[in-house]
Length: 268
Image (cartoon, rainbow, N blue to C red; front, side, top):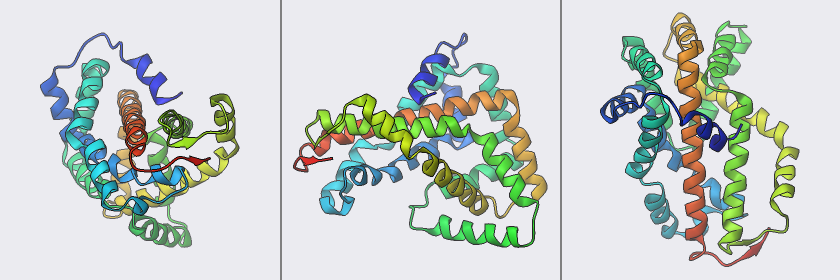
């Protein structure tokens, strides 16, 4: 299910959460920092068009700062969560993340979210995993369980594909590229690379988890996995993941419109 469809299905929650409680939720769970980290994905936009962000010089960083403005993304997320998250889901998530373990986890995740992808998490996390696998550590299974509880792989794949499709269609509509296939063909083409995408997501998630939670004990990681597996937390995470990918898609569409003023058309 795409992020858009998921948002459509959950936005009719029966009881609306007060805005001040939403703001508390965003801060305590660290979701506000996760939203801020969306800007770190911005350099993927030019790459999808066959160019590099550096080709635009300082103009690119200015564009990213304006399109991925933190307060704008924060308000977009808060608006949806206010309408779509139930009080029960919010209270359950806040209760866990307010605990000592929860706050230490959020601090570690916040630091990890804002690491500009320069290979640090990939290389360090990969080295940690290699060491764990070398001693047949149960930690590997715990990290896999934790990642599985953090979100559906199928939903993540669908959401990433939707972000890419919406961006390419927006770029074509803005005259940035000449798209040589229509939307159905583009969607079919996306499925051809799906297995590679899944493998990259699994590997990246494991490396990221190994790096992010390296200071936590096995019992603490297991306790976190158990907390994420609770039905109310699963519902809250499904919404948060959908919100994050919808904002990413929305901002990438805005990038496509802005690129019209920065780059000549090219064939794709």
